[in-house]
Figure 1: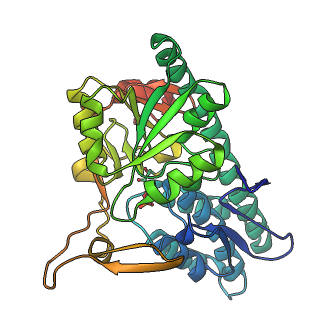
Figure 2 (figure 1 turned 30 degrees about the vertical axis):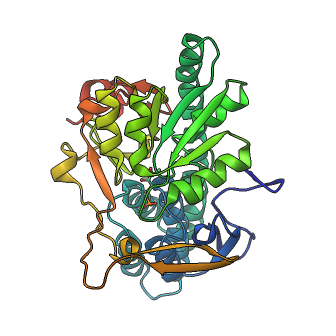
Amino acid sequence: MRVEGQSFRTVWIPEVGHSVVRIIDQRYLPFRFETADLRTVEEVAVAIRDMWVRGAGCIGATAGYGMWLAACEASATADFSPAFNRLAEVLRSTRPTAVNLSWAVDRQLKVAADVSDVFAKVAAVRSSAVEIADEDVAACRSIGEHGLDLFRDISQLKGSATVNVLTHCNAGWLAFVDHGSATAPIYRAHDAGIPVHVWVDETRPRNQGARLTAWELGKHGVPHTVITDNAGGYLMRAGQVDLVVTGTDRTTYTGDVVNKIGTYLKAVAASDCNIPFYVALPSSTFDWSARDGLTDIIIEERSGDEVSSIEGLCDGVETRVHLLPEGSHTANPAFDVTPARLVTGLITERGICKANEESILGLFPEKKLS
Ligand code: MRU
């Protein structure tokens, strides 16, 4: 995507011949656009854990590049494999819910294991990191093409009146390497001349909707309105939402969707109002071993500071302010589980399927469990 006329991915290798990974540092958006250079596995781990990068695809791609730095570090030790495995676990343990993280780490472990010479291992893991990022871009681009049909159909049904879509959190290009998942069909429809307007849930506690999705959509010229997380139900009942499209951090092979906290409530409201509720995801976000989203997936519990305070600009200065009375306790589950029965369909790089085992494995038959 373009920022001030320049094309960007969210993570990339900036200089040939140097073991450096560059990221868009999302902590400062929308107030400042900054990049950061990561030179060690520990720095990559901090960037993922402390959400300099975030979103399933972006976390996976950053971990893929992090594994290249791990290979570089392991190649400087007496025994490559134990060092590489240990560094892999450092990356894997940074965040528990987005499955793209362990998917990328495992893929890189296998790439290294398939090559015998240490320097060849480092080169193979580097190429594979680039491949992981390129595949993420291609998958999100295809999600945009498949989702475009949904927008076209709704637009036709409405006699070309504006299609109003509601989204939650940031499943935009910042959450991937490019394009985004939930936003890919939105960008594609907008570029195809279909009038689209996006209701952007602010997404407390970290406000990824207000801070990131709104910024992205604005940069691309897509009309949008930021709303409080509690406004969606009213807007749905008032006939102002045609469809909901969200992303996901992990989806079971049976179609249960784990996504940013608050997603479930939007799905319940959409179901009550007969509004289609779609989830967009690349296949790297399916968990092919998880059957039940509620019992088989770890939901990250984050610091209560995210609830008890909020960040913003005060007289042009980035500031964090405290919100709660002294002594109040906080809880901060970062994700929730939307059961498959509330999901109208899954938009993947191979097409749109129903949120059930048969339909998902119909699109991805090679994942059939024996
Ligand atoms: O905690 P985050 O910001 O890493 O949360 C992940 C997300 O961005 C959302 O849950 C998103 O909707 C799905 S990930 C593409």
